[in-house]
Length: 355
Image 1 (cartoon, helix red, strand yellow):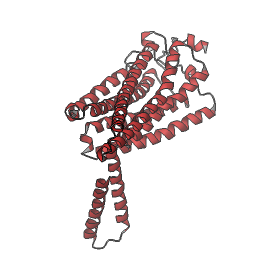
Image 2 (cartoon, rainbow, N blue to C red):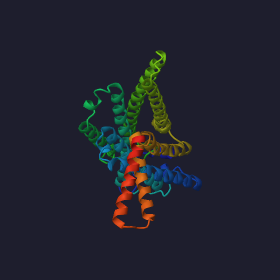
Image 3 (tube, rainbow, N blue to C red):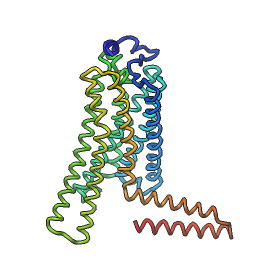
Image 4 (cartoon, rainbow, N blue to C red):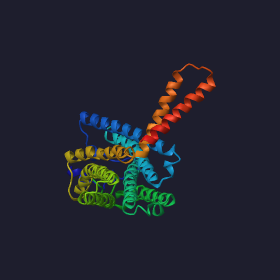
């Protein structure tokens, strides 16, 4: 460990032919390698399927893809999809198969991981602001949050996160700048790591503040309704809506804190103290919590949406109808197909209205 700490700026670590990764290989036993592989593969596959489902539901609906809120959810799903692909592959390739490649290749892959997770948090922040405006200024929401402004915000967010994530590849690394290297990430300087930690903390704090304020407003509104004994059907419906909103927001905040706190705490600790192999192993497993966050996001932000659930049910019913159709004998082929398809469409419409 001491040799790794004192040799952080050695020429072997900054060689153009490869990276000295011995100090970063913290999964010593085969059991740890198998466990981390299973975690990454299982969660990665689930995350990929969930986010592909969300994106397909949104982009196959002309109604949904025009709404700013669903543009933000699409951005979140895209970032989480990239995170599941890039992180799972890179993590297993590095920690299990001990493959890093040249510094440029390694920094390109690490930049992809950084980009996907940072863009995921950026999308969460835009989603939080979208809901904040919707709750606090409902009458002016459609004027403030337009599709054009949503696309502009997403473009700025993705460009800025891409530049920040690939700064090490562009020369802001401990080899080019000859600064102290991180004990957690090869070629990454502690100054850049500190900058990224501050950025993530700002994003998380902004998200938590926005949702906490919405939660407080929902609680205040519910208390007002109960205090004045408003028993009208509309009032009771609003109370139930506020309670559902509160439960969702509490879930959002819990997921964010649980998934990101361990990683950030260990990163900050690494800037102040030297790390032993045990702490590095803990960090490796805690890193997978970020993938858990990407796996939970589609459930919390997309599949809890009433419109997306309607869309999903509609697609499933159409598939069921076509499956039943394929099992029927063709009697007067064209006429029967047209009649059955009309029946499917009628069922879908009835279902959508009843929801």
